[in-house]
Image (cartoon, rainbow, N blue to C red; front, side, top):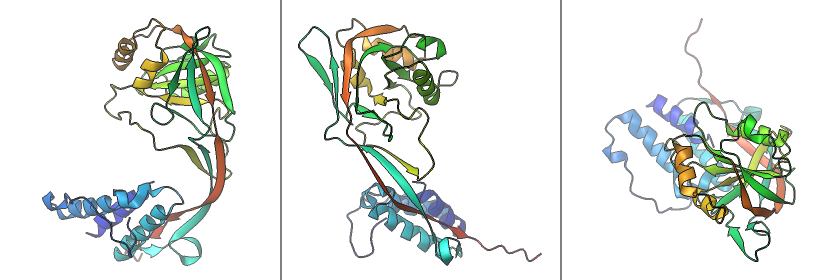
Amino acid sequence: MRAAAVLAALLALAGAAPADKVWAAPPSRADAIKDPDTKAWWQIAETLSSDAMEGRDTGSPGYDRAADIVVQRFRAAGLRPAGDNGTWFQVFKVHESRVEAEGTSFLAIRPGIDTSTRLEFLQQIAVRATDQLPAGVDAPMTFRGYCGGADLADVRGKVVVCFNTKRAGLPSAGQRIQGAAAAGAAGLIQVDDPYFTVEPPRWPAAYARTVSIAGSGPPVAAALPVMTLSAEGFKALIAGSGQDAEAILKAGGAPEPLTAFDLKNRLVARFHLTTRDYTAKNVIGVLPGRDRR
């Protein structure tokens, strides 16, 4: 049981209810598990992933409660504290960038027509938060398939819309971001692949924020507005373009070749960015060795 307790505790804080409060929890599925080590792992995982832990966000009370449970498990398994000054915790500074819902908006505007399509922030579209994020973007849009190098030859000043594939042999998210930035794009919209079942898209998004260890530096192409769009949002975005959104999504999910086209809509987005600095902590324990040599 010691191995199960240690493993579960280590997994739990890759990303817990207070003792003085009773939380309503769904029925446990642990009773159906016969293997004792698996059952112990599952019980700990259920506790740490429950709604009572409120997501275990870095620096939050829920995270601290989860950390205390991990300490209890480490101690019970015979580990010794290996954190700062003989404690269980390694404390470090973190920096958070967040795009707030209030003051953030996304409109697809068709020039010459007095109508616009609003994309709902965190429901259909999200944006990567960085300190270098501009106050907004106002630019024409162009769809460039998977956004390989050759697809980005003439996108300067435009918002590039790409199919957000995670399939082998096609450009990765990092390559798309670097390529769009190098080509002088005004922004990048990555459209979810609804047919990728290994890691299916999940909406709504809880927030648009980035948390990094203080002093670690900005992410690659941090000033480029990088947005993620749901499949339903994509259908709204290209409405009136004469293109079949469902057919494009199916072709991208296959994956099959995708044809580039310019959108008739223009993206007008405004971002409300906030930042803050605070501390977070790791739980560190060491299991003493038994070999005396």
